[in-house]
Amino acid sequence: MNSSIAARHNVNILGKGAQTLIFAQGFGTDQTAWRHQVATFAPNYRIVLFDHVGAGNSDFAAYSPHRYSSLHSYAEDLLELCCELKLTHCNYIGHSVSGMIGLLAALAEPKLFNKLVFIGASPCYLNDAGYVGGFDQSDLNSLYGAMSSNFYAWASGFAPLMMSHPEQPELAAQFAKTLTAIRPDIAQAVIKVIFESDYRSQLPQLKVPTLILQAKSDPAVPVDVGRYMAQKIPKSQLIEIDARGHFPHISAPGKITQAIASYLSSP
Image (cartoon, rainbow, N blue to C red; front, side, top):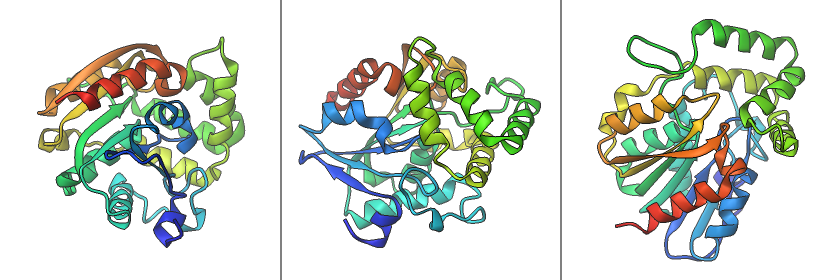
């Protein structure tokens, strides 16, 4: 892979199966977050891994706050990747923000995707009348202030909170490492785009079959959000995973991998 698009996103392709799985990471992580799932699926699937612009080993020079002022630009990147790799009828697995990126891509080009899997995804993080998103604007303002004041100190506290596994401090340390690999200005801009986005109105438009995996205790996405999406997305099913934290594919990989495998093998 030496095209400009592949280089921009640090694309890696593994496995030689007939079906293709695209894995897309959430904020603060990179494609290594999928290591447990890759180990399971690589023998039987073709796996496409990539980093969003501004994360991991992507081309940071390709990032601009104007270009990436909404998730639509990330969805465009995904569609460009699919075109470059001549991918069709893929299965897409997106964690957190990458769930909504997949939603937008599937709305634009539904024939590219067979099935979607959303892990800890949210269409809207802000609480609203009749809707529990998990955060008030004052919560977000405090978060932005902490990031701006001392990004690395903020990251050292944010990582264990989101991972929610104090008995396995190495998990939070790994997350903190990928989180602080992001330029602070990019991290602050991206997290604001994520937390202040609202794609609730697009959910009913999604026609691609979708599996929603939601940890029962997630500090970023309440269970009610997963239930809300399951009610709004026509061809969806919700599985509430008995897991803690916002990264169950890392902290409880067996449960997530098994749920994905069962869904992929179903009619």
